[in-house]
Length: 254
Ligand code: PGA
Image (cartoon, rainbow, N blue to C red; front, side, top):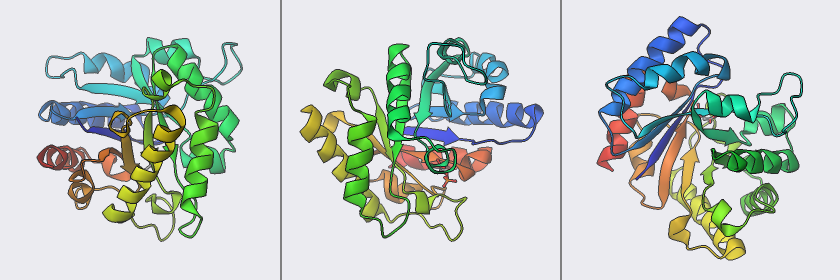
């Protein structure tokens, strides 16, 4: 079963807009129940959106996630506590998004603490990895981010993590961005599976790896028709409910 994750980032600007988008996307996702859909709105809206998920038309394949979470048990100023994340119904947490790695200065040690914190309260961590520039040596970057990010986890725990190959240069908010080609994304996905299976003695089929970076309704099918690619993280295109539903429909066809 493929997983499509909507990363709204810090959008939209107001709660009424967020509510409309959420209601439309949940209705759309309900029509494509063979796909796991995860909607990650800004945390400030989550408390009010989550109850809408329990409405009549939603199905069990739709969940919500957070775009970040605190990693400490102590109540530090401004941090989002693990209790709050759980209380507001999030089942997934994005960890290590490039905005946070490169703009907000998160390092692999912090990402590792967040992964462990998420697992400790039963939240599925979504670990985003990928090189920053097109000509960075991809294999080294992926191996470094995976080995440090997943350090200290046993194979049963690693199996619970959803890994996303998201090259930073392909993210739509970057100047001159372009999606990766499906063939190159597939090569990276296989590289990730190999690194994890070698280090944690897991079968590659038990390691779901998704793709992210300028995914839209025009290119999703090319990525999703590769069985090795377990789904996608969708940023910009997830802010339009119609486009997002087309992405789900095309994933279902793949
Ligand atoms: P994009 O964003 O789909 O707009 O490229 C993806 C992301 O930042 O997770």
